[in-house]
Amino acid sequence: MNLIINASEAIDKKKGGIISISTGTMECERVYLDEAVENLGKEFSHPLPEGSYVYFEVADTGCGMDKETVEKLFDPFFTTKSTGRGLGMSAVLGIVRGHNGVIKVNSEVGKGTTFKVLFPANELSEIHVMNPKEILIEDKEWRGSGTVLIADDEETVRDVGKRMLERMGFGVLTASEGEEAIKLFRQHSSEIVCVLLDLTMPHTNSAEVLSEMRCLHPEIFVILCSGFNELDATREFIGMGLATFIQKPYTTTVLREKLKAILLAKENEEALNGNSLIEQVITE
Image (cartoon, rainbow, N blue to C red; front, side, top):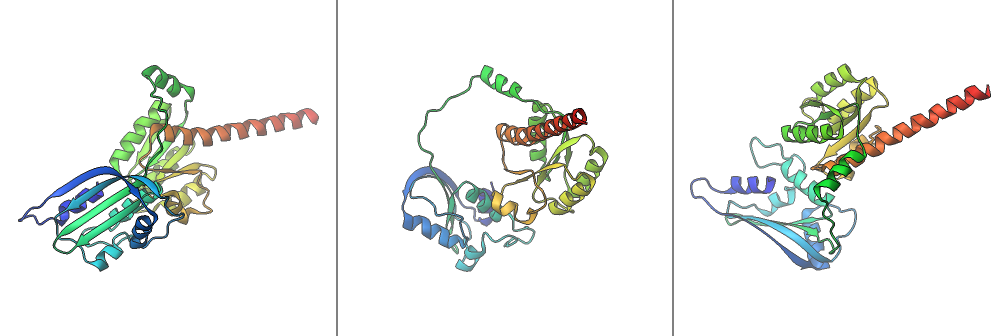
């Protein structure tokens, strides 16, 4: 979406132009992949494997960019727009890196820009498609209880997340900015079992929101959510006791497994502590 919006804004509104979107597969050699990584000016955690890649390409016949602009394109807070925040292309790169992909950029002033996003292709495997009965059974395997707070400035994320969680059995509270999240947490801390906290919250940033919640309820489970990959997103939260991380956009299955893992672990710990206490009383 960001790539297409940028392409539309690069086109002269009076003269008009063309945006073309294409998809395909290609074999990528080491030289080609290394060149793509080098042009991004970013360090990847591991080299990209040679082999089959799937790609989508967004090309426009707009104003194009000079070399200096291309080199800064993915830097956080760099923007050529008077009202922009400079996070759009940084988020694009974070999503692509999170899926072990790479972006090739070709641009020339006055002639347009092409972004080619490449992802390693999965090997062919047997695919089992669940029928509706199986899906219903799976949904009933584990049910949650208590309330989950979703703190996210995107309305769509809040609405979709709320529907997912309600199907799992949770009550749901939603907040669109940091102060609202803290206020709701303060009012309902006794019933909230987990918080889904977006990385970039307006007004009060996510680290401050997490810190305030920890003061109110030190043991609360907080799942950090972001379109960036886990390494980049969690860097400033080291030592702050995050329960886990989930990359957006997430599916119901992924969200259920994350919640199930942390909440069942808590139940098991409480059960063990309860047994220890009983044994101690019997012994005494």
